[in-house]
Structure formats: C-alpha cells, structure tokens
Length: 179
Image (cartoon, rainbow, N blue to C red; front, side, top):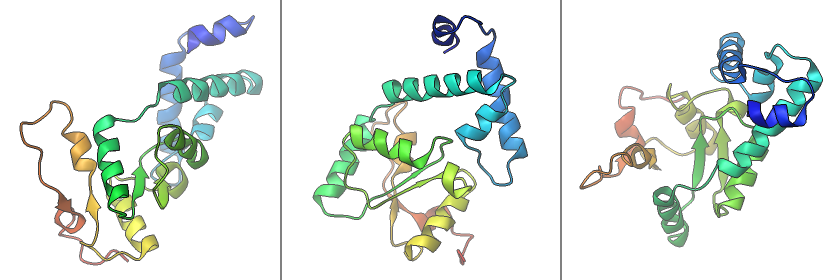
C-alpha cells in the first residue's frame, strides 16, 4: 500500500505497514467497545488529514480487489439458500457494514437476512459477545441455530472428515441466559 501511495503523492511515506499496525492496536486500546473501525484506525495515523484520507481510500480499494468468496463457505451458503434457511452473516471486522455488504453482494452473497459486523456492534465473535448480541437481537433461542464458522477453521489443512455441525449451545453450554 505504501508503494501505491507513493506513486500518487509527491511526499513519500516510509514504514507504513508497521505504522498501520500500531494505529490499529492503539485504536483498539482506546476503544470503548471490544472492536474498533477503520475510521478510528486512520485517525490514529501520524499524518495530516489529506494523507490519511488518501491512504484510507487506497486501503478500501485494495480490499475491494482482494476480498473474495471462500468457495467452501459459499457452497454451504448456497445450500442453505436452496433449502430456504434463514442465513445470518456474522463477522469480526473493522470495515463498515455497507462496505462489507457491497463485497458480499459482488461475491454472490445475496440471500442472507442480516449482517452483523463487529465494527458496528462493538462486540466480537472471539469473546462470544457477538453471539449473545445476535441471539438477543434475532429472538432465536439458544440451540435453535447453527454456527458454521467451525467449517472455516477446518479449511487449512483439510481434514479427511469435517467436524459435524455443532449447535450454538454446544459452544456456550456454560451460558444459560444470553440476556
């Protein structure tokens, strides 16, 4: 990204990768929630607004180019759509919801009923709080929906036989009340 920026600007920057990593860490540390967002991250960069804005636009452009569907997950998604199952997409991501929706749409994800992104909800899947948030906001009961993110974790390396589907309550048995 630094190289791309330097092609566009008469004032070059150096060491952007490390500066960007540190800005994200600082933004997460200062966040009042479990997650940050790309705008907060870029506000932490030690550049003037014009430089930050150009860098932000470059990052979003690169994300649009690089993000693509994982075919194994897309196949599960398409199968759920074929069965007319309600599909809710949940993501730990600092990018805006609208941006994620555009990427999903461009990659053929058009059937889901709701998208929950940690940059908007302020809670993470990795802490379990996103699942509690989704349960509370969808009205689903614990154990009445399936989490297929286990499959994504199994993709590298490919197991001979994938782990069977697990109900969400199997993942969080200790939590009886999700508020």
